[in-house]
Length: 120
Image (cartoon, rainbow, N blue to C red; front, side):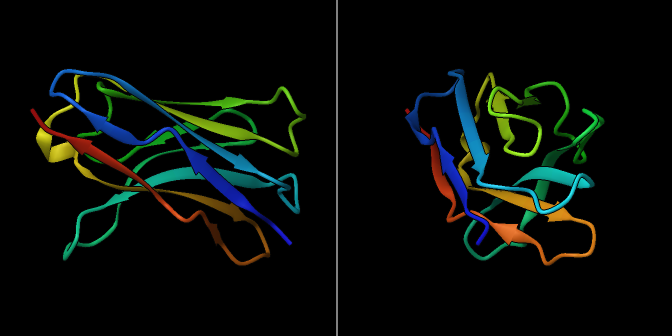
C-alpha cells in the first residue's frame, strides 16, 4: 500500500520562506513523477511543479521563480522525497498543498495535504 506523507506547512508572514516535504513509501515502478499541487477552497486544484525519477522538472504557469522543486534520494531512488522550496511568499499563495505520485500503469496516489497560510 503506497503512502504519501506531506509535511512543512504552516502560518508565515508575507515575504517568508517555507519548505514542504513529500515522502513516498514506494513508487511501484521506475517510471514515476512526483508533483506538488495547491488548492484554494472553491477553486480548481493547480499544479505547482513536478519532478520525475530522472530529475526532469516542470513548473505550472507562473510558478517558476519563487518555487523550486527537488528530489531527495537519500533513502533510495524508489523511496523519494519531493521537496518544494517556497520563497517570497504572498497572501495569494495561501492554499492546501498536495503531493501526488504518478506511476505509469498505476493509479495516482495523493497525500492528505498540508495547509500553507500567508498572512500578516
